[in-house]
Length: 613
Ligand code: CA
Image (tube, rainbow, N blue to C red; front, side):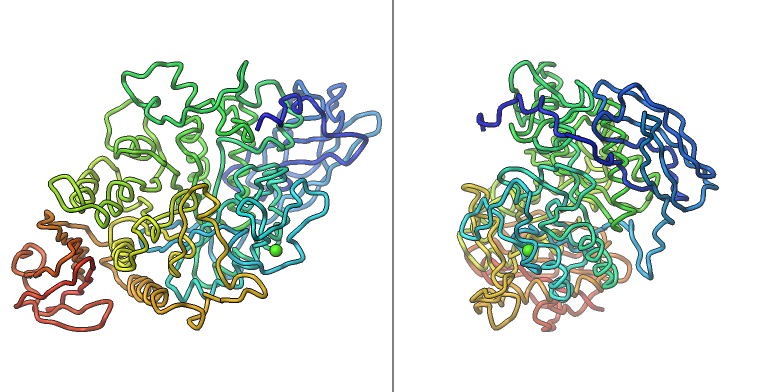
């Protein structure tokens, strides 16, 4: 990474006269967020501190900020609730006045679809990597002028050509599978010289990655999701940008980024943020150190940075119809800034969902970053997190470890018993794997029985279930390195020899897992107990773990046998929840049985029963 010398920061990118850029490129009439700060960026646009004016009823300039770098102007606009939608010019009074067209658009009415509706425990999230899921438009695989011209499906770190049209083409497939919400790794421009495929190094917030199809394709995806009653989750990154972001290459001011006398990486140690024994300097390294040398750390204490990021998040909801955000690298952000950002989004869109990535180890570590019951000075307003605890200290040991006092499925029981720390555990996003983790099929030693237990747990436990693309067709991969868990979905590219989007392309084992997910996810859509019901679990005994999801209308009994031998399940042991029922319908097989006698559950398997009177 040393080859990217830091003097690049000093090279101005803007040369010669060109029409200045303006961000956000438009706003809307009738928004609650009615004071915005537009960034105007163009060669020498701020030289001589020019006056800035505009003429549109209800819109006023409250302040013009002249900053250290004359290529930038920041202009505060106040938009009266009475201002109507329309076009106007923002004029910069220089020798030759520069006019920048601006628009207040009418707010999105939805065109028969809704948006900003939130993602809840009634949903089932599918996470995919747009470059690797499906190539719906080979014409955009390479874009002339962009820094990364790699295109090589044989390399895990080069671009493969997948795009948003590829996702659109498979929305019926996902809908059929029972998926209700789509989360994609970031879709914002990553004009980086290499490793641009993952999307986490933004170079222009207001540009959707052209190799994914650009803003029009993204709008179309939002529309196509909503038309099917599905939801759009955007992957937000506030902590850092790509080294080639225009605000890094030509910084508006000296303190735009957290810069250190000598390159300083974050320690990745979240403990330093809440540990009562922490060394203050170590807290600063965690928050203000760079995520990688290619991803500079933004200074959230700089008010221009904060405004830029918050406005962009709101802009995306209105522009693309976002229903929820997954927030990348949550622990590395300035947490007071994040509270402000979350609040601004929720003030504008009260039903929006926000969940943060917390790749941490420990329930307290995780709960610190979201709404919790801890009596501590810092109170996060984040609704929930990606629940790494029920993965690492839950389902993984449940199927991989031998049962013991503190081992095996007792770890899952133990972790869920700590839910008292969360304000709302039902908002936690649970998962078996994601784009940064070894695939579950590989983690369980390619044991299909264990994968089936995993998915059955995922779709019946408390929280919002999220699966990673390819789990349904037993894709494998160990993060050594992470490119191996980001392989192409077979059948997603024109000319692929195998197409696993169709039954004909799947092996019997893959079909078995696909069918299990499809059956359970579609059952779940109609199941009030699994979507919003309470959770009650019994102490695991001899590797047998029994929990219930229930409400006044429905009781679902879930039995996980983590043993390598058959076990008896006796309904009379679960009187608190099973009393009053006489029949049990197997949700996966459709078989019915009486609750008056015990039944046998197969080794390493899970049974889901709907109890009936
Ligand atoms: Ca493409």
